[in-house]
Length: 150
Image (cartoon, rainbow, N blue to C red):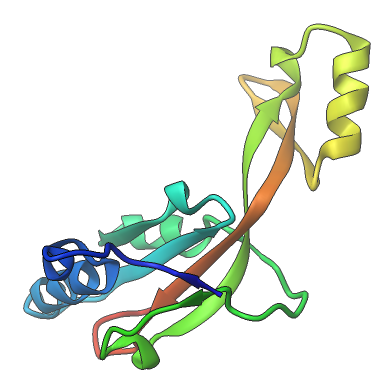
């Protein structure tokens, strides 16, 4: 298990759960639906952040990740008093490479072998393939409240 959060005397100001709770307080006062989650990257913790959205942006963030249905234990521990109130879901973390950015058939074949998912999209009337490369997991956590639709 790995600890998440900032250790030290200023922990309460920078701890992801404290940031989440501050945003939750502000968003609840709006009295409208919102998206609020902590994203924890594993093993790429540098990708971690607290994310919020309102109005039309909610839809975008609800579908930003691919869910990973393979069972795996949550890899982090935390001693924050609100930690037990969070529900965590496992998703796939990674990045996209567009086929048009590759320079040779060998590069395309190499990326095809590494790709977690291959998609095709029409861009300006032309079909373009993208390759999603997995870098690990992204754990999303939230507390279910009245306005939080997640």
